[in-house]
Image (tube, rainbow, N blue to C red):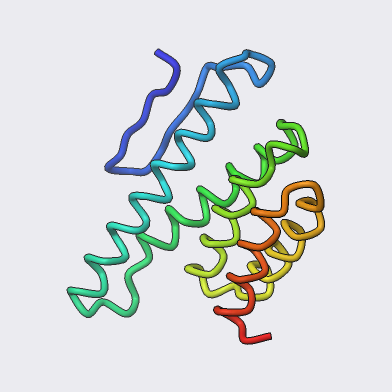
Length: 130
């Protein structure tokens, strides 16, 4: 078993070495699952009118931590999807400065990828009215 997770206490552990070829994809999947759970928890928190609920924020922050670690593990030309996800998570975590910095980084790294650059510019202009 690669991961053992106790979802009731939000504790996951892994016996997988970071040099194992399965490490990056499994870490990315775990971050994706945490981001999705943050989204569904946030919706439930909004519906319940819970202003002090922290479940979605904790999931979001854990996903951010994993994605940031993954950026050190993958090639620069593979950063795009991770950076977009990170920027979105920072937006949802009420960290607009970090989100803007990531969109600017996407634009900088996407010089050879005009679609990604245009998408990041559009997102920045729409969300932050530059």
